Length: 153
Image 1 (tube, one colour):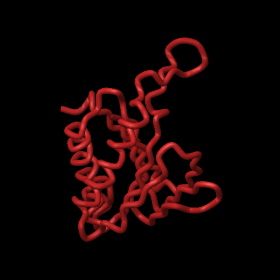
Image 2 (image 1 turned 60 degrees about the vertical axis):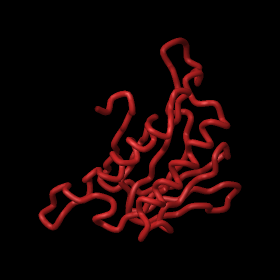
Image 3 (image 1 turned 90 degrees about the vertical axis):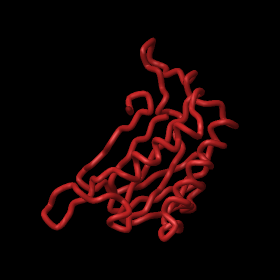
Image 4 (image 1 turned 120 degrees about the horizontal axis):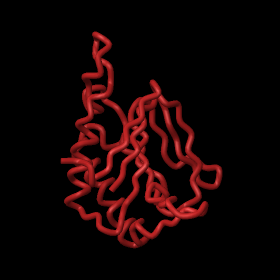
């Protein structure tokens, strides 16, 4: 599983010119799911993501987590995070999870984030799996973190 986490001042996702998810201060998270991902891997990634201390405290140090700042999440499925560009110029996506499995795991991630942020559950917004989405964001920093489940201890 791969998560591309962007600390944002605001972000939104639209489908067919309609905003379907919108947040203020928080994380825009692009989620890539591979063929071998499981709910156990998702749980590990969720814990890491929600625990990241990348918001500034009163001293300007990145010491605060998403929950410490009452932040929001915008979670967007993006199979292209599994693009394999080693051969030729046309990416291969053979390592991305099959749509049915990936969608089920994406929905699992949404539900778990809402469970782990009960006071902020309404602040967990999402894209639309498999849709042609347009994402707008104001990256704060900019601050972008790449998490790959294969690289986490």
